[in-house]
Image (cartoon, rainbow, N blue to C red; front, side, top):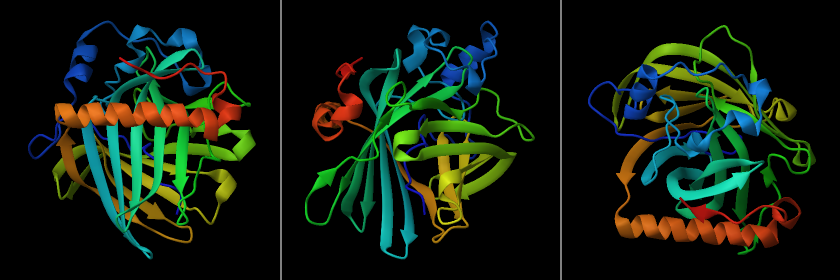
Length: 289
């Protein structure tokens, strides 16, 4: 199965039986109409100073929120812990939110990643790069799959459209030719209902994601986005292994935990200049918002 990187963003409060749109999304809906910008129109000029205020109702990013998705593979228990940090980084002339994502297999850290995301002025959420550290059984750490938009031919992609609808075109979520990375997506269903350990949700959006360069072995991931929450379930279909991950815990970090997350994120960013020097060398250091 393809790596469960947190293109499955999960934030905002889990409220009652049906999730509600994020407060920021409601405020935006009452404000001036946003310009129509498509995923083929990436340009730094489409991002204002609000680029790190991500309030897309299907993919909100609220600093200090941490989410855990749990599943079972043939290798045992699989757990992904996703944290929205207070750290930001400039990538391809856009200020991004830095996400700290940890992937555990049977309780052991298998991968630790920084992901860089931003929202344009039309409300689309973009992925501008990833720094995934792979932790081997022998204790070594490497990051061969690092990519940043604007470096080595890599380009940003849309993680979530401002107004996702069925029957619309396939879109690219990110491309990095040097590492043969290409993610694509298509809206599969809208207005669905689903339940899990954290509650039941209505108005759910289902997005089909896949890497066309790694088919059929990788298969597809169907991500269930609850409005005002983010991803509450991921279902793998096709490929050599099918896994379902469900949201099992939402946690608001304490002040000490938030400081620790910030420190770890800055540490990983610093380490990237050594482990992924060819990609990181010309970037500015990450900073705290």
